[in-house]
Image (cartoon, one colour):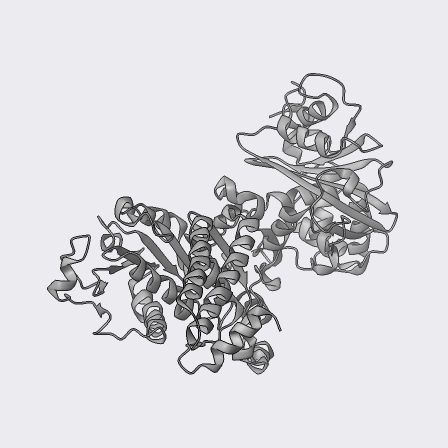
Length: 583
């Protein structure tokens, strides 16, 4: 029997020992306890009752007299939904209203004298005997937080909080470093929510904290916390023994103190970001609860995000690429299962065959690279991008670096017809990319040859793209190859395809399906994953003349009601004058 198991068993056998049972996420959040904690969790994980309640409970005991704030999208949501759940958690921890805290009214003077800030209005505040106060604030009413200074910020159901409003609330997080800087939770943030769906007006700004987490450090924190837990259990066991000496107790306490001091240093200033599904708590929720949700209570789209914690794509019936599915992805594009750092790591790339690329220009310039695997299978291997003010030169440098070892240095280049503007003046973007690939930044030849394949490209109408993609992705045309996309190395492009929304309009009796392009006006940092830019690069790569000719014949002979749109577009393509003459 291990020391840990033995200690637990000895402690559990003693009636005076407080033994509690909880799911693993509760253990992790308790053990890790970093300054910033962001937990995205499915339904039934007790995010408010356990995580928010315990973190606020610790703040109160750790920083006597300090001020904190609970913030939500609306005050009604905070008061009716969030705080009752938090108070329930406080009750489980032993706090009782009236004795351990007073809400929404003036507390006794002895409580007020211990508070480090002056509070005149307690209608939106919760007070504690040691002088701590928690302000309740609403993002839709900034006056509730105006002028406040707090040392920890709590945000529950954060997916409803708009990023711009959240950013305006963060300045209240300041406080007295001399008085409270010794606490790990000083100037910290606790954020809990379930998975957001940006296509339904929810917000995902808190994902920015994922990049701030040092995963190796978090792992080591958990290991040390586990060791500390074992030592605490051992201390309980030692104290219960009749023959335990004071020397042994003192030595055990020294081990505990060393671990606690080490944990303080490891936790201070760190971020813990975690996403968990409801299955973490399945022993309490029961399998029947999950089965009932999936059998009709929730549609699959909702279940994927709110139960299984998966970032949702657009509902299939709202998508522009309606037949895109998991069957078009593959996840074994590299041997080690992580994104490639160079082309030699791509398992299915043929190193001695030419490459093909599609590009869309704009604030985000997107590039996708594909290649025939065989005559009946086409693979897209890699996606790249740059954001303004980065230039085509920098995107070409990405390409040259990634494909430096590629054996066949021929690139067939398909792109937005706007890339041909000012071609006669030799200032067009297509030629700029061609030159940037064929010559490096120092003007030296790279050995690459870029063939501009869209010099006489017509306007690709969205209704025609919609019809073509149904033909290609649906596999209804044997003359077109099947499509496979590397999910590890084309993450942004796949997100763009899955989030591209369709809108339907009518011209007389004709139904016109268009791609909603509003996402291309998002903040620059959001464009790669959320905008339609990459889906347009995808379109330019695939909607080439020979494939379109085959698809045109297939749709025309099938008698599809959409064939008129393809006919109109195909006719305009074949009769299109050379747009290289400039504007």
